[in-house]
Length: 149
Image 1 (tube, rainbow, N blue to C red):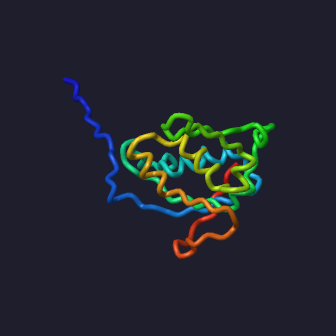
Image 2: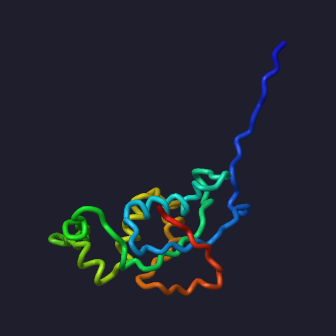
Image 3: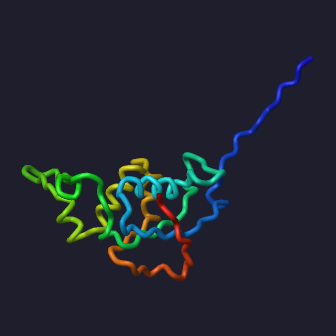
């Protein structure tokens, strides 16, 4: 007579998730590689208790967003298209100009594209804090330096 083993799949509860704060210096980092690492930590995929439908991720602070790097000629050629849903409401932003006006938007756009586009993704995106310069107001959370390759 053979016995069947029954295993239970672990599912993390939102109350039992421990959150940490990490700080990433974007100076000299390539945008896509940095954004994929940030999205992984925001989602919680670096933790053993990762559960796809639960927010198990950590907080990320990105500093020096104005000094982020691009490979190739993306700095001159990359564009972002938005539309206001009104006739003639199309707008094209070039990365070079966006880095001068609002450098935080470039990193936020890259990370948002790597997160799920649903309620969970919006909840995860709120844990990303991006600042153009080297200063940030989150020193009370004692963030840990995160290295991005």
